[in-house]
Length: 407
Image (tube, rainbow, N blue to C red; front, side):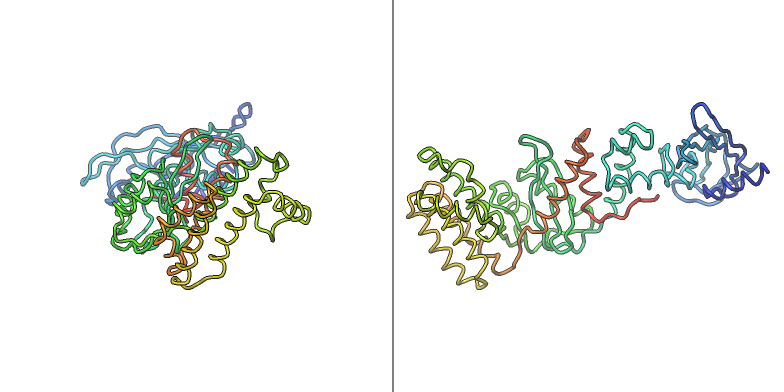
């Protein structure tokens, strides 16, 4: 009966000769199951480092691994792990097939944790599996790190850069996106020009080449412009249309704030002016009509924003777009509304990159979509112990990695 029981555990844990189950002990008080393995006499092993076959052994080290629970009980594998005498690379401790190097968990346990990490906060996973959350983060980091190192970027040619907040305050992570595959290529703290340089360095580690980057989509932040100019000089820059329209929305809101000082009736109307007419409720449409008649300057700024959106919505030809943007800039600068005048100057100063949208059709829709997922990760996790954990979760969710990354 004991042999049949041991055989069952061997099959469940994929344990094969020269290893076998020697004994299974159950600790009722701790609700734990301990599985003790043994090694056949004079057994020989393949080297875990260079895979040299049929190596002899000398001595052993007691090792324990946490494995998947058995019927709700914590389970552990114990083995006097042999030291392998490899004629090529020296003495190494044997790494059993159920685990990875320097880990105290089995690969099946790792896979279970990673699958849950896609949908649950790490603190909740730690509570469920009865481990400290620091150990869970280490599992995620180990597999994500290994899988990311193997990521191939040799075909990357069209990329987008955008920043996302890592926590409250001015704490940002810059992400580089593959606009063709809709995935995260790289993430790093900060939003300076140096983040572009760091990306180019990482690109080369993954068989990528900066010479292959033909198009880049960015916002009009000076840091991104400088970074692309310095480190991706051959790439054609397209300023993202969503950020251009966002600048227009911000300009309208600045006009609204100024006008509110004169007309308190504008308080609470912010989203009426930021929304498109088709997205307004009937009540909001009535309010917009009434407020527009009472606040001519704000109504003019709102109309300018709608005109800018119409350019993107209705024009496809670059030359027609150039003519339309030029007229828009003249109109904005004649408005005598400070925020709109500045908007006109901003667009005029970046017109070449803005017009590239009408040639390439590139925009940061991919970036914004993944950014929304990143913010969901942040809300779901309710905090990270450090920025590297956050970046690992970004890669886990957005980089299409092959996980778990088995040895």
